Length: 129
View 1 (spheres, rainbow, N blue to C red):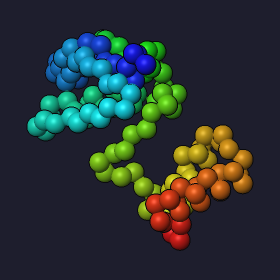
View 2: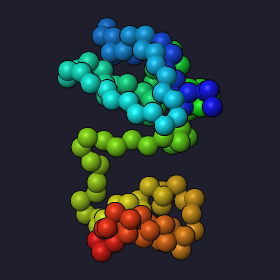
View 3: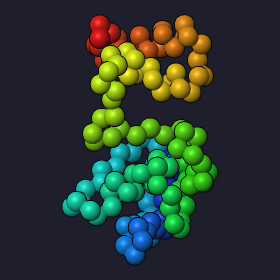
View 4: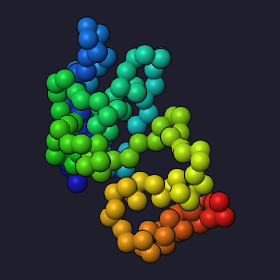
């Protein structure tokens, strides 16, 4: 498989007069891991937000398996984001927090959703919560 899993091609992002990303290009192949390191304010979070679709790039392209995703809504990108500060609903239990996203998408029947969430919680030893 020669097509990279993820390609960034000369991605630029501005906030008014400040250029947060300047011609960022990289390829991540299937099975590779990448770590973004740098000081606060250097663009790490902005880059991840652009990849996830939470921010629009001003120029350049983002390819997932060779297809441009830069104009796709975040929920159409087939990507997941884990935030540094967890976005949990404090009034919901663990099960309901995990089930929230799939319930909103309404892609699974109630019984299948219950079974899948149960399997995931068992996998991480949190089925009693």
